[in-house]
Structures are given as C-alpha cells and as structure tokens.
Length: 416
Image 1 (cartoon, one colour):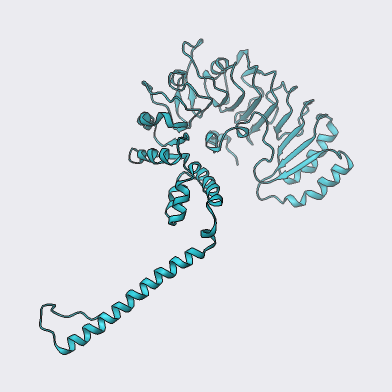
Image 2 (cartoon, rainbow, N blue to C red):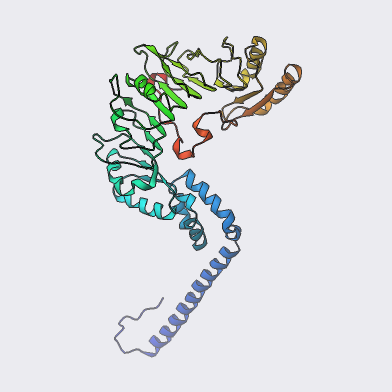
C-alpha cells in the first residue's frame, strides 16, 4: 500500500494518482471484509447446530454442565443464540470449582444462573471453606481436601453431601456435627478419623450414606453413632493389621454394604450385624485373598463379588454381578451351576475390561442358558454396570455426590 513520504508536503500529480489508487484498493478490501462477515453470518445461520431449537439444546447443555463445571462458560462463548440458551438453562450451572480466592466470585455467577438451585462446589484448598460464608445458603455439596480446625461458627444449613478427599487428612467427629452441617446425609472421608473417644458428647447429623477409609480406631465409634440412620456403608480397609473390636456393631437399617480390601485379612476387624442387608459388594486387590469377609449374607438379594468359586451358599441372591475376564465366563457359569449355591438366581451380569471381545462369548452363553437355565437372564457389558444395586448411592444421588474414585490403594496393593 502506497503511503506519502511527508503527509504535510504539497502533493504532486503523481502523489494524487497514487493516493486515489490506494483509496480505491482500501475500499475494495473493506467491501471484501464486510462480505466475508456477511457470508460467515449466513453460513452460521444455516448450520445444523443453529437450527436446533432451545428445547433440544437446553438438556444437552445441562448434561455438559454435569460432565465439566467449565462447560457452560465455554458454551456461552460459541454464539449469541447458544449463550442465550445456556444462560437460561439453570441445570447447566449446578457444579463449580474454586481453586483460589480470585475465582471465588464465580459462585455469585453460578448462583445467579441456576435460579435458586443449590450448588455442588469443589474446593482445591482447605482454607477456602471459611471463605464460603456469604454463599452457605446456596450450597448442597462440598468436596474439599480437609476440614479446618477449629471450624468456628460456620454453618451450611442445606449441605447434603460432604466429601473430604485428602489422603492424609485427619478429622475429628466434632468437625462434622449438626452445628456445622445440620442437613448432612452423605459423608465421605478419604483420610483418617482420629477420634479415640468412647462416648460422643456432641450431636451428629442423620447421615444415611457413609464412605470411609478405615485406618485407625475411630470407625467403630462413628458406625455405632449412626446405627439409627445408616442405610449404605462403603468401607476401605487400608492396613495390614487392625486392633480387633469384640463388640458387634448393630446397624438395623443398613441395606447396602460395600467393602474394598487392600490388606491381606481374612475377616473384618469388627463384626457388622445388618438384618436388613440386601446388597453386598466386595472388591479385593490383586495382592489379597478374595475370601468372603462379611459372612452373614443370608438376607442378601443383590451381590457383586468376583470370586465365583466361593463355597458360601447365597440363598436369596437374585442378581449376581461378576467383573472377570471373558475367558473365565464358561468356568464361572459351570461353577455357579454345579455348586447349587444360588437357588434364587434370576440374573447374572458380566462386566469385562474395554479390550475384551464380548461378541465371542455370546454363542457359548446362549447355548449354556438353553441347556441349563432357560429362565436365567445374562447381561454382558464393557462399560458401566447396567443394573444399579439397591441401596447404592448411584440409585438416588446426582453425579457430583459421588463421581470419581478418591480413596486410592496403598502403593503395595495397587492394581498391576
């Protein structure tokens, strides 16, 4: 593009010609740029995504918000129509993450967008929990590495779920009292419960689902304190040795017991008496025995347990879930049939790793069913379990309550 050497100098005839030519060229470029913008707008107008109405986009954006907390912010930057849709989709703004004090004000944005719904909040640092005082009435789920001590006067009146995710966290039961969490129903503790009390002198919330890593002595006391309210218990045994508790723990309302064994122990360090138990799930690491460690399974109707060679009789089990390799399916079916240990069985669900060829099993499974158990329903999957077992948190809670495995095995017992 031609530019005069001195804009204040007297123009010559050649300068005038060059200036006119430059102006014409710039006007043509301006028209081209305007045409490109118009063309871009027209193409966007006829694009398939643009033609989707609010009624279709809104639930899609809601699912995106469930999958990642930043999704609604990213969606709002795509185009004006999408921004309008996502801003008017309260369900897309239910989960957020606070990493530092600077993005704490995101809570104000999310609370305004979700229109009186309660938030699921993940805190990256423990001290941030004390910064939530202005927002306590708008939060129903908190995930935090640890709880501060002391807790002070902070109270979350509507909080339903508390997840303490730090592997080296240590909390006392006086930090999860009704003074701080009066509405708490779901509690997860990945670290240590450090209490050595024999009697509680404070009031605990009516917790109905508990996930806990049993590391020290506080677990039996907590379980006994929740005997009237606990419906579902998931417990991770992390150590090789525990002190045995000779007094049985009675949980009369417990419906679901889920046990993860990372330690080579034959029985649990305390006996759980659960007359209403209907779901039992046991997972053992590859370096431990797969023997049944909760022996009283007479009332269990739904079982997830990989050891199909176990000699225990399960008189009431109707649904059996097995997570095994595909090459063990035939052996498992034969063991189940020959042992007569599942007289009430109606459904078996096999779950395999993603690399396994499910289709190779189908002819053999169909032939076995025809020959031995024509009324038996067999399901094969490589994804999520297709049957949610009664009493598990997946049957009633939205994903942010439980998503992700946060209690990891000790190094010596990790999966190989």
